[in-house]
Amino acid sequence: MFKKVRLVMLIALLSGHAQWALAAIDGQTRLKPFTLAYEGSNTSLSAMTKKVEGRLKASGFQVIGQYNPYSTANILIITSKELKKIAAKSSYGGFGAALRVAITDKDKKIQVTHNNPNYVGLAYNMKNDLANVKTRLKKALGYVNDFGGGEGVKASDLPDYNYTFGLEGFTGFFELATFKSHRAALQAVESNLEKGKFGISKVYRLDVPGKQQSVFGLSLKADAESQPFLNDEYVMNIIDYHDTRSTPHLPYELMVNGNKVIAMHPHFRLAINFPDLKMFGKNSFGKLMDLPYVYEEFFIKAVGGKWPPEDNW
Image (cartoon, rainbow, N blue to C red; front, side, top):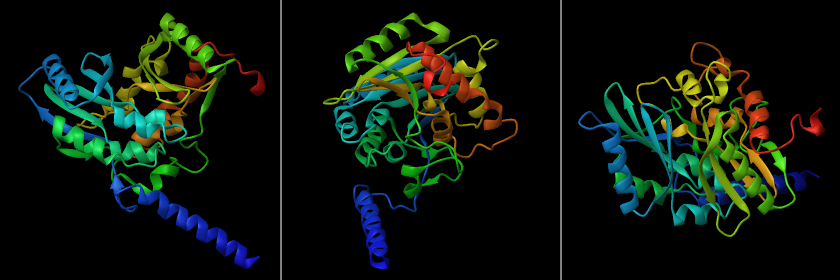
């Protein structure tokens, strides 16, 4: 029995090393969720948005959507052949196939920021640190520093990250709806998001090649008085308060995976980008206590699912 336990432990250890063989980053390295590529005051939000879009396209990235969550920010959603190919190799890699490049006006200074590909690749279990993608973004947009998340998260902790014991990790998904087929699920999501009910509509759609997997970015612009948690600006005013803005957190997304529609749980999706947020206080998760319940209910309704879910009520 003792030998069997030792064998299992050895296999687990070797498996861990095999996973890290795919990444050039040491497991003890602390990674941060975002990258600041540029900051300056000699241009406008619209002019910089056009400039950034041009540089991205010239560097081989595809701009598959644009989101203007509030007057001081534009977000370009990008992907590439390389990103989609990597995404297709893992179970839910589609969530990392689209990155966000944000142009934010903070006190008359323009910040160009994006998701840190290294962080995304590991946190979303893509088994790849997306180092080449990061290099290409650096060449296209420049590089100042990685930021966000306080001291950051150890690379070895990202694949199994949770904010605290008992909360959902990456695969603790909301199950929003089930349809007869993948095609039926796509049609339902497309048609329902087109209606823009509850202030929820589509920003982009990305189809993962070779898989029945599509990711939809969501615009959340409900009335902040009646449904504050379905308003991106309201939520970001609580959690995104440092001088360098974490605008690439947006937009939230859902996935059509086979015949099912799923979304990452906010306990993971918010925490992975803001791991340094305190539980309580002025700028904290405590201010968003009811947000997961609101997201679950209205995301289900927005894609044509059943509310309340029969298996939970």
